[in-house]
Image 1: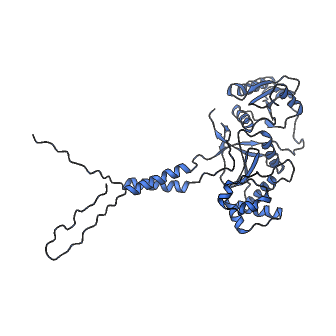
Image 2 (image 1 turned 180 degrees about the horizontal axis):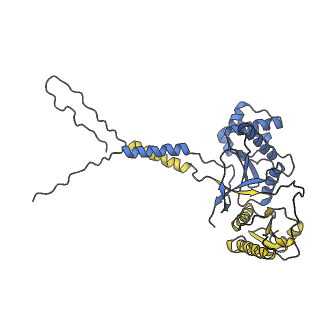
Image 3 (image 1 turned 90 degrees about the vertical axis):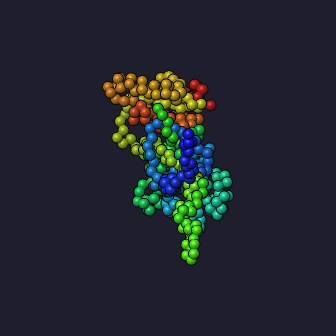
Length: 202
Length: 180
């Protein structure tokens, strides 16, 4: 009997289609990528069941962790304008370089007097330095009040929208710190907040 | 894996004409695909696909000087005092007159109490719902406040407010060992 020979198939596969798909996905991920931002302090957010989406623009986040308060406003242009308004208010002039650096800084927690020095550092130093937090107390003229106020002005000026405020607090944070922030905001008639939370099931 | 397509190339050429070898049009894509998938993996891992979500909190306006405010019977209000160690106590009515009960934040504790009291108050007040006053003490955590607001959302109790705690209520918490 003649042996039936199995034809040896080539091991090379046509990869064109695979390559197409891979690059399509790659393009999608690159375009939709918003890099993870590093919070300046460790924050474990609490979980809630009934939650809604938060806006990505015209939004400001106040981080609360370890008794410190950090401030962030979305959008490079708004950030820059906020710094300009703050500079006018506190009689500090920032150089264009410093303004550009500030527009790239996500959240910060420094008294405004130390901000200039902070912006003059290089990126590596900035990420390692321990930030003391934006000063907040129960008076009418604390720095957080001015930051929020300036950011609202800046957003109104640039986008003609009301700035929305989100609070991102650490689960284990004791309530007085949160209360100080909330009362600071209520002093400028902000009564609606978004508490940033994770989702949990009922 | 690399392949060389030599078909059609002039192998034996006799005489004058020298044919140029036809080059293969197929390129080895293995390395390219490898790289593409590596980058995909990188971008998947570095992006935050889950967008942050938030719970809306509306605080009562502080400057409203008693405009449009109607007196409510104390029997319709339930007060939650948030103490330390993830414990809270609740009472209906005025502080000191009704004895508070200490409970936890779990499904079986807080939610059950809220639903039961809401039903009871609706029955005794002709369909009017319960008003919940949340009073976090200095030793309660942010998580506790969020949990309480979430439970109120789940149980559908819309009349609620976060209010500063009074010394009398702090005394109650201290007595029950929920505040040091």
